[in-house]
Image 1: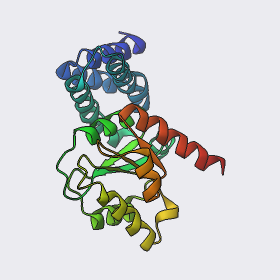
Image 2 (image 1 turned 90 degrees about the horizontal axis):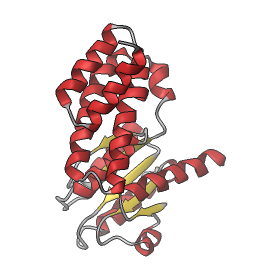
Image 3 (image 1 turned 30 degrees about the vertical axis):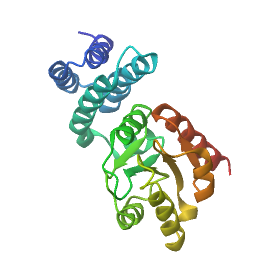
Image 4 (image 1 turned 135 degrees about the vertical axis):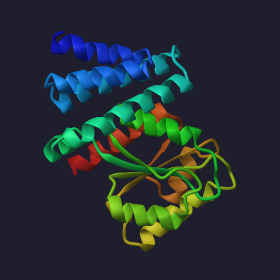
Length: 220
């Protein structure tokens, strides 16, 4: 079997959400000497992007997206030890730290944003839900992300987004990271009021805004 055929089979298996087959094909690709970055770019990432397009078209739904993302993550973990430091750095568009703010136990929207960012080549550090402001600050210091995503799905917790931004200012970190906010009660006006760098209505929009924020950052 040629390398191209094998990589195309990985793509198709991800689109088919066939976890077992993807693992077997990835192992075969490693065995015959296809480079890990080639497996990721022309196999796993390509397949996940196709699933993302099907989701955008309304042909796939949230459960399909979640399953595909999990298959992708499992196989990336298998390939990580085989990647050189240079390869890892070269292929990441940016690092995004994301979480649902303190007091809010909803994470579906945040999870979708994390998945769509992964599909588009970002490194995502997901802190989960009900994340205290102090933990956001601690992890920002630890991971030095390019962007922080703050999700709030209730009107009573959206004020925690403001608290995180205030804590960033007090910690001297505000100018070192871009902040994007989102969630059902959140609006563009609210984002501007609390000093966020961007607001996203949905996961697809979040990717576009983060790309634009980083592009503007590079142009400075």
